[in-house]
Amino acid sequence: MNVISDKKISEFQKKLLLEKQELLHDAELSSDDRKAVTLDQTSVGRLSRMDAMQAQEMALETERRREIELGRIERALERIKNGEYGFCQSCDEEITEKRLEIDPATPVCINCANKGGG
Image (spheres, rainbow, N blue to C red):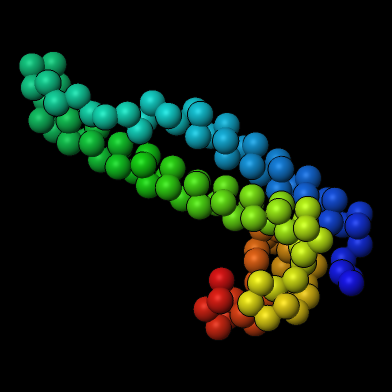
């Protein structure tokens, strides 16, 4: 039986859904930054191309991190749906409410996180 109240789980779910919506919105806004860099030397100088390529790489890394976070959120929402939310995926102990308030997508308790389990 989950010790976290249904009301609190609902709050965490809303927070997760809002965070998911914000990440998807950010991804949409930054889609142009991830497009291939034009290598036409007649229209863009070498340093400008290098700057553009660096900016593209940073945008791609940001997108990779965004996808990882979206995956964490999706898995947390799935745990809520399955009634498994709030329990450590490593040791099955309850995750403290305070930890979930800081990161509602966390899959592990603080003890397992400190051991390298998440």
